[in-house]
Length: 280
Image (cartoon, rainbow, N blue to C red; front, side):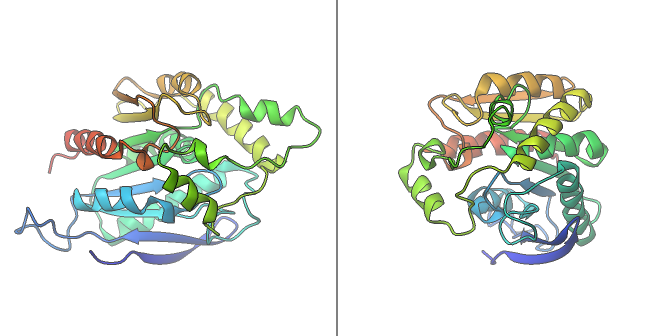
């Protein structure tokens, strides 16, 4: 499979680095055009990480017939900005839209699917409110949406504690946590107050922003997610969905369902959903 490519765009606050996993002709569809994907997939990663951690889900989507794109968000990974400092998530949504424009310029006329994990789920939800008419489907994985209590708890403190995300909270697979802990592009320090304030504002903005109408939504969540608890996300997902909602909760799974021990089941659910949306 061809290597991923990097693109550098002019982001809202400096250079925005995006990754592209090019479309590949599937072995089981030899007559399909090598240069023409079935659809485009756009991935929004979570807080403190980077798009390179989405290699496996991106490859699954490429095998399914997609060309896949995703940025390192402002202040994350290889993109510009002070690390994990996001003062306004509207800027991040605008950056994600610029990557979508890059993808559509390369492959015009194709349906676009947006996949958002955790903080990326919040970004994706807001994107769908702003640009939903450009999307064929929305996929939310452990999304920070609805009744997420962490920002309120942190903002009530005089000083935000230097307590990074526990690698063990990500997956039951210890190799996932070990790779996360050793990854130099992952932020291993404390949250920053302006970012926490931006989370709180955007949660409220999404709550007040209305539903996404007839846009098909797939919600994936682990029932042992201690970073973004299931019950809090449910409030937001059900408010956001216009009624075309597919829900899949994975027993025992932690926060990163795409990196979990039952990820094959997660990917099968994702592909099954997309087959119902992408008809070609």
